[in-house]
Length: 487
Image (cartoon, rainbow, N blue to C red; front, side):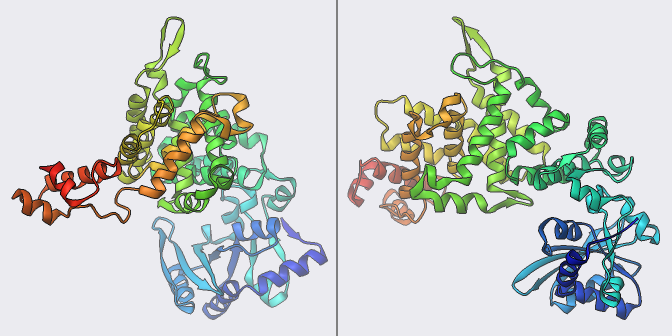
């Protein structure tokens, strides 16, 4: 069907579209190549929801997709590349008016716009608009055969066709992503189809699954999204190891079952990341910078922190035992680390990302162990920070969130938790004295080799590290003392 906006709304939307430089540039190319272009998908969805042109724009074209994408990129001195060899989709990356745009060009499916949009994922993404109607007629006659505009108004995620999940099972994850991103509800029939199609996800590449999964973790309310993924049966398909956590009693020290505790830890980790000034005001800038940056592909530091929070106790089901009437999980950190590493490899995470997961889960109990000491020495601080190299902030924030997720009342003021001053102290130590930050050892490698008649090698580095450690502990403070130590 075709759908036309009210006059007042039409004027506003028409003005936004016609004044968009990338859309106007695409129309000029369409006119020059004597073919029809259609604006489609997310840009029209976001226009209805936000009243603004999004940075990601999609066009459907009749022919010569590669040439069109090249001409468009050239107009902005941008770049373009093939996005999908099978279908022949191309993407242009441009910079316009201090804004970066991702502009996709795809060939019309079977040469007809109605057939094309009907074969898309969800109705809210299946709205199209002819550029000739927009610029030549000044008309906003939306091509909407699946009722997408109506579903936008009803806030519904509805699949376009019964084949939607068969054609691309990754759409199962996208349904949850859009529902959380826009605060929509998944339509009951679509939800039923999702439950029926969960196993189809395993036919997709893990790279695509990983990207969608971590995009979901980037959205506000990650723990609620994980609950929804679990209720739909998706989490058990992607992370079957988690099933062993469900319903597991953790003993008298916990108010939550193991899986509930994992979700609570995700929630509290997100709370810390969103409000670092509340927890660590002196280091809020460091925390924000550290977790906003991209680790790899679609994975941000914050999303990885939430992934680690979900998996941090994954070793408990395999180590659960009862002794003297109490439940214990001896060695669950190492078992959990091994399990989490296998899960990380399944998700095709890069080696450096896997290493962060490995260290954080293996060492997440160390701050608690320091809490039990009467006095935490500089040596203990130094060794923990050294062992956590590359994963320090992930582990410290996890340890605090883990403690917050043990009791209901711990959410009232986490700073009253016994572990809080330990975490704050370790964070201060890390920021003040991080090994290798800009630190020069009392003795250089050349001085050590000359004095001990050594050749370059691993041993020299070990001695330099030994000197740094001793200096931090106050055992040496001069070159002479450092030389005596290594001799």
